[in-house]
Image (cartoon, rainbow, N blue to C red; front, side, top):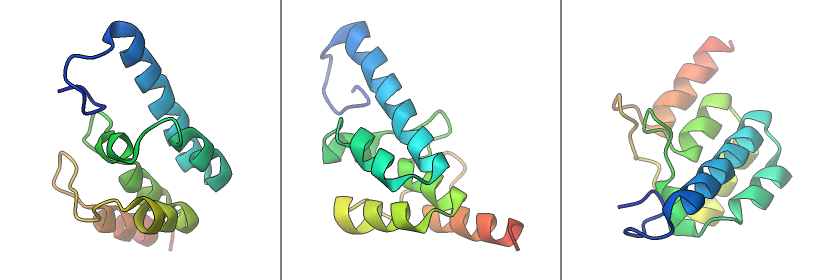
Length: 106
């Protein structure tokens, strides 16, 4: 199944657009700019946004949690409805990443 939840659709052009869109979402998350995040996240359906993962299995919520960007974290949880218990490839949840990021910034 493709990263967007559609089996076999689109081909290489759609895959490239998906990757570029995901990169734009991640850049907005890392910058902490919620307006940019919302703008780029609109490229994806809620399901697609929930299924997007980097090579380490981290979702956009993992990244926002790790960066400590609370407004983006709140938006992802409250408005989009992401499952907060999703784990990355190492078994860490979004909460784990938040705790690690907080302890490193103290």
